[in-house]
Image (cartoon, rainbow, N blue to C red):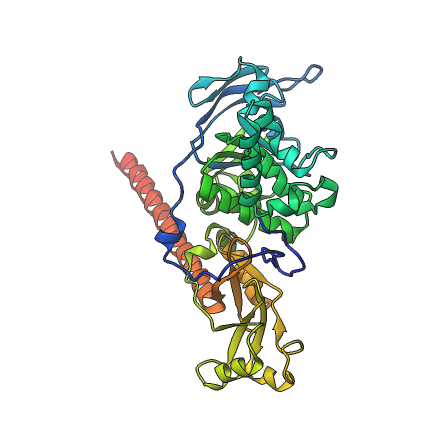
Length: 439
């Protein structure tokens, strides 16, 4: 998860580190085939938590199933018991009654410490031990599990690389020397270090700024696409739930389930007024959070690097095939948009020519993130970057607006079909009533 720096617009990023030659977009099947699920099925059966002195349970008789490799998001108002429900899965809070089954094993009665070593856990503000280095934090669970030192060292480096942090640079640092986003990345690396089948996440991105939060969400989507763990994620932010969840459980008081369904089903057909309150206005636009940048056409764009002579770039622009190039820095990251007229101010140098690239999106960003970035760009396009910030292509306004119109058309068609269905139902009832009167 490359650390973000100054940027504007939701879900947009500038990265601090990248390497390698810029990749070119491949077809979606080649590029985005998900890994086989490595998670475990979780079944909660009548799970209840009562605290002494309280007349009502904090969590009351909750039953649900999370499929292997699935991300389920628990969302609900403050005090509804969603964090309590999450913590009962790894028994940080012991249930009063009910059963927890992981891959058909009843874990309600086994040793709680051993259980937690098999379940990754990430919380808000990362929860890193301040007196330990990054490497020591990540190594905690593998060390307790008795892994040999060589295997632990290799795993630490693997985990740091997985979340986009250079092992050579970060493993010796202490948490106080990390930004908020970097701390959260290390927290996720620690949670995954022992390769657990289940990952519990309790509002892990709630304490970081909105731009970093959007990028951390994108990186979690990327990691899940690669690892296919079983993730249970708690949030109070419905937009975050839409973006991350394969399914969403909307919880009332005492964690009673108001609706448990896919994000699209909840957006288009909320179960009742309580769920509608979470959906809010603009359901069609919220559905932009269901589609990723990798799902739409990412086009190539003329590029040059800052090392190339001004004369070479001038010849490229003067050839008449393009009026603009994207200038890449030495690590192949988007740096400047350079138009033909900008070269008149270059005077042999590109230092003052062109417009700095402030906004980029990753391929795992949502179309909503991309649309916000495009609308703040005078050129009506946004550069798409890879895992370490390297340029991979461009998405333009025309492509995004086509998707918006398709969503709106689908909503209109669904509304018409819904009204038609209601009309047919009413007609049948009227006919039945009339038949009853004449018989």
